Image (tube, rainbow, N blue to C red; front, side):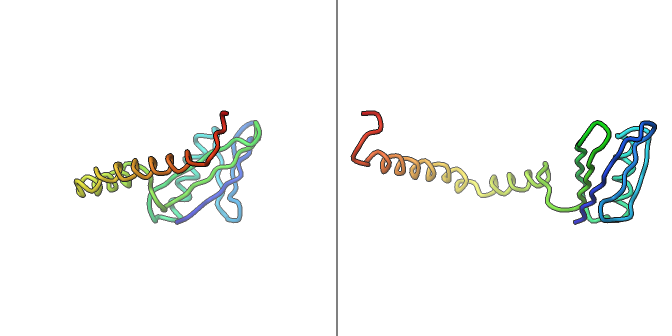
Amino acid sequence: MGVFTFVCRDSGAEWSAKQHKGELEASAATPYDLQRQLVSAACAEDKSGGVQSSFTMVSPKSAIFQVVIGGASAGPIGGGAAAGGAAASGGAAAEAPKAEEKKEEEKEESEDDLGFSLFD
């Protein structure tokens, strides 16, 4: 998994970025074009998996851009596998909520038996 962090600045005519603790740099006319160039540069350095990015404005003329390559995915691929596993288990998945409800009821009953009432 690779994490690339860039400090981005607007000089008025163009946006430029330099990697924090690294050698990658890029410049472009718009923040969007700059982000595309930085993602491409990061992908050229690390080809280990999916790409996530985050662009956060710090001031009107500066921003932080982070590219994360690889790592866990919380999207449809990861979620679909978990849902498929639950569906394959059949009845066990259906019984789990009932067990949780019983535990909640027992907890509520034990809270009621304190010997005093908060609303007296």
